[in-house]
Amino acid sequence: MLFFLIVAGIVAVDQLSKYLVALHMEVGQSIPLIKNVLAITYVRNPGAAFGLLPYRTIFFIVVTLLVMGMIIYYYRVLPAGYWLLRLGLALQLGGAIGNFIDRVRHSSVVDFIDVKFFPPVFNLADTAIVLGVVLFLFAFWRLSPSLESRQQEPE
Image (cartoon, rainbow, N blue to C red; front, side, top):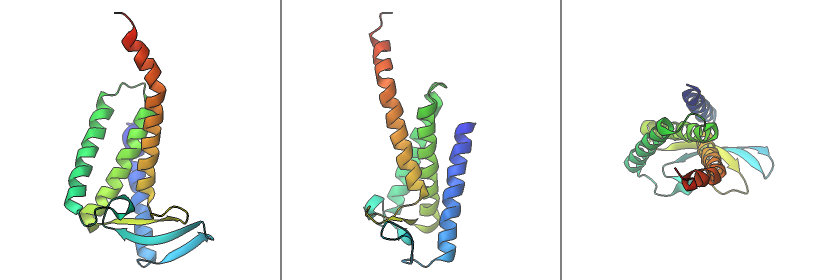
């Protein structure tokens, strides 16, 4: 249950932030928050990260559906004690759904977080996905020694 509450929270915050940016800004408009470091810059991204593969909306929708299915499947087969892996999956799923909604509704994703020393403008869904992947990999890396020792134990 907590897994789906985290997913829903990420989707809600992501969609609300995109809605507010689109409501109060024009595409291309930028509002500096920290001079030469951080701004809110309203961008519509029709592609993947860094604008790769622009206007391949159907492709991204299909891939996202497959990824969401894999995340849900892995969540369901993962034993209950692996809370960090589950949190990583929840973050990834919430972010994927947030960007999926944009692609279905607008054929592009609303991006607005503009870190001046990092080239792409991104959004909260992207942030959740990246944090989720990092958490998942970290938790998986931490589990690796214990998983290996279990495999080596005689039965």
